[in-house]
Length: 244
Image (cartoon, rainbow, N blue to C red; front, side, top):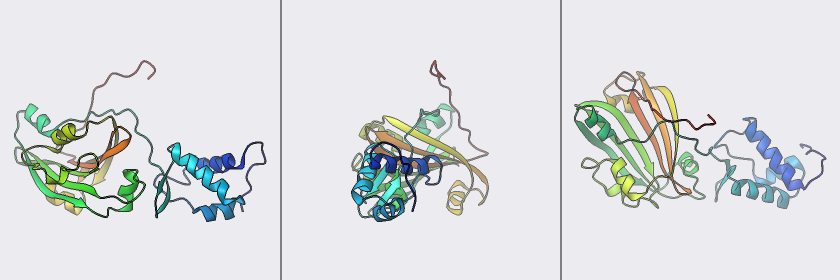
């Protein structure tokens, strides 16, 4: 049993501090499932009502995500200011004087998405999501593998679109205007599926741009954009705030 600090203040606040301490130290990273309420009761020696109130408040404050029938998880961090603006790849390619072409590999609705997607969308229960995989070509050379998962509550007809005739960017701009964006960029080795569609060898260096977008308070899309390292570069120009 872990002994909570014997300081003034309600017990549920001490339980909150215990949970936040584990999150802040990295012991409980984002997307990790927390111990059950019963386990926390046993570990901390407090009542279930105390644990329940602490977890409920941490959820309302955005630190935790509770999924009905599944459990309680450490919530993903909220987006910071984006250093890469969202642009239409077809427009980028046209601006370079080249020809854009898109090839739709997958366009579907997933009825029972994986747990990591439920967490990424911050859903409180399992819901369907739309899913697409599209290869973008510049003068017939593949430059981007775009995988998107879309919240159908915000874009209900996403999986019925013709993304050869229009881009996902254009459709989503019309369907659900974005208010916040989160970007994470990683250097990765191409997996077999990405290598096949990008016409490179498995293990070749690529850039992976993971992007989440919000429309109001709801997560609108979860995206994985893979670029061939030798064919593409990512950059931006922006005006920093006076305090930066």
